[in-house]
Length: 401
Ligand SMILES: [Zn+2]
View (tube, rainbow, N blue to C red):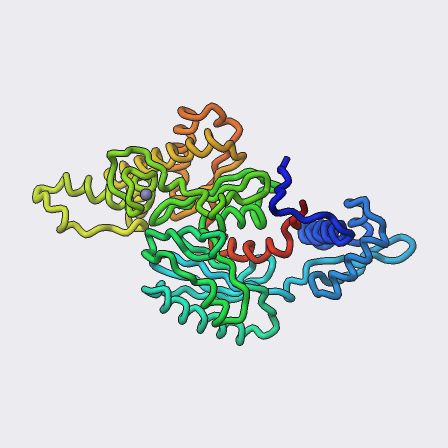
């Protein structure tokens, strides 16, 4: 049970009850499209007249629409309600160190248009390019009214200042992307760490129903984690919660970009795998001149695994073990009911999944209560999580007491 915060509370008014019921109705319509008013009254226990009042308001605000007429043996035929996905659009931006994707989605997180560009080298260049492309997207889809811009970043966002404060793999530090994006587009902007965006995607659009405790691990250039506990994203007082990628596994380990040594991501990220592969292949070459060996990309490394290259297979197995070690830390400490791994490595899940499961069985007391899933890359969880960022402001539980 949540303790009431006596430094920041809201007393209940007649508005409070109305707002709570309105959000419940809106979410029931979203979850059960299409649904009649009678079914809404049955599911909520509210009076038909109260349901009608709320749905009329939602229709007048264009959040929902009245669709096809249903069948009834007698009396008035029910008219089914559904979300008005054309009413509201969201601009989603997924920034990664190498490339950035910008798209326009509806509130079901279906992207109507999207494009990928090389990530501009500086924050200023990024903002200028992003504003130009966002304004073009909006001009080419005038029928969609945009509610806001959700941005997933490979770093952490300070909860008070909204500045990007920790993005070692991007190299931008303590920058305000929000204000210039808002000024340049006239839209509200919400920034969130990419792993948190994936956690929001899983909670709002995931295929598995009613998951309230979950951990997302994004495996890319670094490692990020997004944690949802009791249906709420874990953020910490400043927004830095979830930095499991920078928890020390070995204090004598290799130096990390964060300044520490032996962080989890120094063993289990794509970058770590590529550099390990490079070191083992160098040690098998007569010249011992490792600088002469071209470094494969992580995708090329996965290709070599599929071809059965023994050193690539060894590299991937090592990565799997270290992923397991970190996931075991999450499972032991937080007991999520589900862990979702996001990233290119999930393409070889048949190899890496069993290794992670084995490590969990070896190390966790509660391994039987957790399921580990690969995320489906095709679902674009980082990008679609940006839609959840804006959606949650309208569909999340209202703040009471
Ligand atoms: Zn680190």
